[in-house]
Length: 170
Image 1 (spheres, one colour):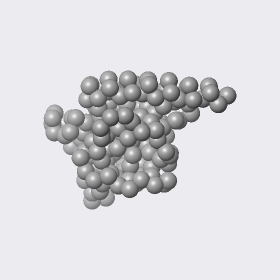
Image 2 (cartoon, one colour; image 1 turned 90 degrees about the vertical axis):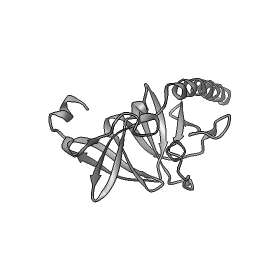
Image 3 (spheres, helix red, strand yellow; image 1 turned 45 degrees about the vertical axis):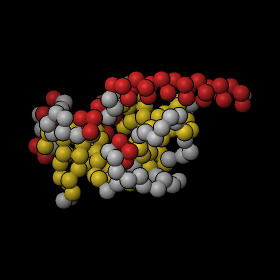
C-alpha cells in the first residue's frame, strides 16, 4: 500500500468482471479503456496471451484474465472492453467481460491477502462493495518473471512486424 493509502485516504480502483468474478485494479495503473478490436494472434499453444493490438503504433499484448484464472472464456464481441494498463514497465491489455465502475475504497476495507494466496500471487487484497466480494489485483504481479520475459520477446517481434507493415504502406 502507498503511504497515502495507509494514512486513510481512499484507493481509487476500476472494478470489472471476468467470468462472473469481480476484479479491481488501481486506477493509477490504467492507461485507457477501449473496445476490443481484432488482434494479431500469438504464436504457440493456448495461453493467457491472446495476441497483440496496434494502439497508436505500439504492439500491445492482450491478456485474457479468464485463461490466467482458468475459468471459462466469454464470447468476445465488438463491445468487449479492453483495459489498457501499465504492467512491469510496459502496456498490456486485459480483456474484461464488463466494466462496472470506478470506486474509492477505504484502506480499512481492504483485507490484505497472504503471500501465495492466488495464482501468480497477483491478488493483493479483497474487499466488499455493494454486497459483492472483489479481488484487487497488483498489476506489477500479474505475470511471473518467465512469462514477462517471454512476453517481452514476443512484443518486440510484434513491434518489428507492425513497424515493417506501416513502412510498407507509406
